[in-house]
Image 1 (cartoon, rainbow, N blue to C red):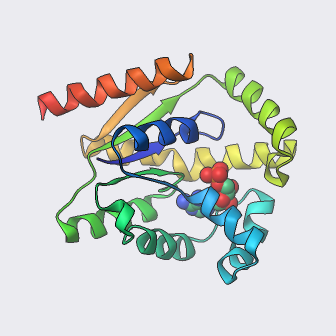
Image 2: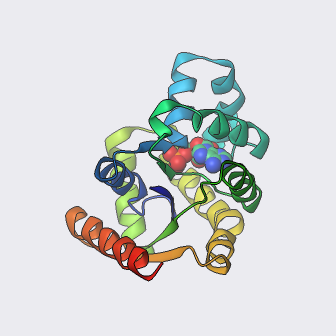
Length: 192
Ligand code: AMP
């Protein structure tokens, strides 16, 4: 299975990406986690990403694209992947499409997580308190949400035009949301 998950910070993409990767025995590739690990280890990639992350800005496309393309060559991506946090710009989506077209293994679906504004703010406040993440401080949250609106939202149109977009009602217990997604993917398969 080759999937991307889209949605604003706090929509539950990460949680569902883990479940879906388990279900399909494929890799869970979370770009934010990869960057955080690199920052913690003090690698060159981490140093390149840190200042952007601390501000709540997107890391430049060329850095992210190179990292993801490299990651997708790992053995654990042989059965596919769930990409969480990538793509975040149309430029990134195009780079992914080009790579997958070259391999003859196109993306199968883009899941877009729908959550109300009120629920998002409630979840993000909880996460900030629990994780002490520098990028979950209040003004950074706002900044990231604005960035999402400008750069990332056009991705839903991008995938809708390609017939890959699946909107997911992401409010509800975790298992219920997972079941919704699996049902949608199954329905898609039957139609396809
Ligand atoms: P996340 O955990 O997905 O919210 O990512 C945390 C931070 O990592 C983001 O706020 C960005 O600074 C950076 N990041 C993760 N994925 C990407 C991406 N696809 N493009 C640009 N920056 C990214």
